[in-house]
Every structure is written in structure tokens, then in C-alpha cells.
Image (cartoon, rainbow, N blue to C red; front, side, top):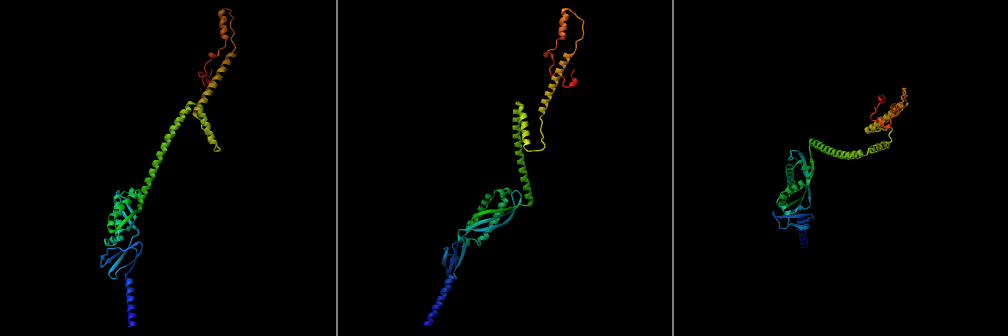
Length: 314
């Protein structure tokens, strides 16, 4: 009798252990348990921790509530300005309603992946190449709105969408490089022309200031010589202004004219007078006195009126 009781106790313990093993479930902190009892959704979603279900009656499906990072395969399309591009992206989403994620969609991961690819191709066709390259934030927001609208009915919310890379054909890359180079060249030419205009205005002001004081040109020439000599060059090229040559030419001609005039005066003073018949009349005496009188300085010709070359002198 005792043996039968012990055997029955052991059998009941074994059945209890098997039942406990079949009914016990552990839900992790980042998971939720959706229980289907005889194919129908139980009213309560099991939270994290230890829980029990009815074996062979209940079936529990665990749903991950963490943010899921899903890469979107590269999609090739034609932009609105007829450029073939290849774009890939990444989607960040999470489940907010575990029951809807199990009941309303067969596989929410696959559904979100297909929806992301379709939305990405749609965005490529609606956008221009410049938007894909420089205005990605706006496109990311557009992708998020396109994906979040249907995903919210599946118990899923799209947290963020990012376009990772935009691949262009090699011919388009070369064309864009030439365009960027031409733009840079144009800007450089404009800046250079603006600098030349400002420099010409300053040079005109400097020339106007130097024209009032001729000695300023000589001072500027000396400054140039000092600046060139500071480089310790073996050969010094000295620019000679034409105005200085003309000034020296005028000075030389004036000096030659003055020398020629002085020599002419001395020659006339040394010339002997011709013998004449004596005439004691007052008129003759007065005329003789006038003939022997030397010319005054006021009667001499001006230096500018005399010829510049020695052979032209009388």
C-alpha cells in the first residue's frame, strides 16, 4: 500500500514537473509576450519576467521592442532631371504595439524592408540630383513620413531614415568636376578683375598726387631702388623715367645755349675795329661812340631762341 502511494506521488510529481516545464515562460526586459489561446488573441500582453501559459492550449510569441536597424538595399533609379543614380539607405524603427505587430502583419520586418525600398525608389524619381547630394535632410524627412503612415497600422513606428550614399556614373562625376572647376575659375577671374579695378583707382590717385609734386616721382624711384637692392641681387636694373630724360635734355640744351651766347659775346668784344677817317663833327663822334659800345645783356638773344646744336651757332 505504501509502495503504491509512493509510486503515485512520484508519478504526480513527474506530471507536475512536465506541466511546469511546458507552461513556464520567461519574457526578457526588452520583449513582450503575445499569447494566442486556441488561435484567439488573449486580452493581456505578457510583460517581462516569469509567466505561465496553458500547455497545448496557449501559444506565446515574443516580440522584440528594441529599435531595429535595417539597411535598405541600394536602389537604382532615374531622377527628375534624367540622371541615373544608385542610392542606399538605413531605417531605424521599433514595435510600439506587440499585438498589432503579430496580428496585423505576417512579418513586420519584411514588410518594413519592402516599404523602405519602394519609398526610396519613389523619392529618387521625385527628386533632382542636386537635392540628393545637398538636401538630404529634407529627403530623409520625406522618406520617414512615407514609411510611417502605413507602418503605424502594423504596430510599428519609424524612428529615423537616413540616405547613406548616392552613387553616380563616371561620366556624370567627370561632368560635375568640370562644372565645379569652371565655377571656381569664374569666381577667381571675378575676384582678380575686382582687385585690378581697385588697384587702378589707387594708382590713379597716386599719379594725381605725384603730378602736383614732380619730386615725388624721384622719391618713388629711390624707394624702388632701395627695395630692389634689399634682395642682394648681383645685377640691378634701374628704371629710368622718360620725364627725367626730357628734363635733362632741356637742361643740357639750355646750358649749351648759355655757353654759346657767352662765347659769342666774348668774340664780339675781342674783334678789332676797322680804321676810319677822322671826323671831328659831333655826329661822327657820337656815331663812333655808339659803334664802340658793347651790347648790353638785355640785347642778347634768349637761350631758347638759340639753336640747340653747336654747328647751328653763328
